[in-house]
Length: 227
Image 1 (spheres, rainbow, N blue to C red):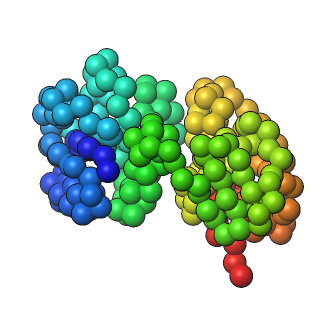
Image 2 (image 1 turned 90 degrees about the vertical axis):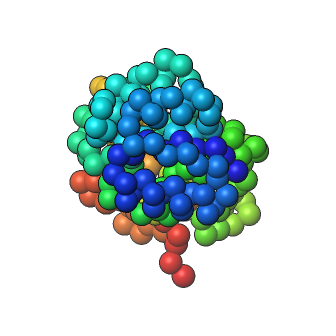
């Protein structure tokens, strides 16, 4: 499993997350301040950092920049800050994922697995399975009911990103930032068009969706089909 540094000032959350990840086999070190966290990152050279933004000695956004100056370690930001501008600014500053409090430990673990897969820390990633849909990240192939899907590179990236977050609502701004690498100025219409194309290849429509569900005013999520 992976070595993980948690930088979180709230003791209850820090201990809960550390215990949960340790029980899953990870080697975990936790700190309560930004400077202790930076020292741990330099000393341990972890495979993943989980970073809170509201730290007592230094704002997490500044710590993120300091970590990025010395390391390319994947960073999941876990914070109560939920405004779009905060999410976009943080991802643009080098964070690999963004999780808004309150969150479940199961949701955090799913994000940890996804980030580690992308970073290669778990070796060759296994296929993602959602119902009859199989997304082979390493081979960049997707199958539905055993039949290959003819996806464009961007359609595959979109499907992979949603499959890694099965059951979670993802905003169009986050998709633009993560899939299209356009944190600023991108058109949400681009996302709408690609989702429409992806629906057709999954054999569904917005009115009769099985895998892709739109949450109006919020975003889209990939779900296990019913039945």
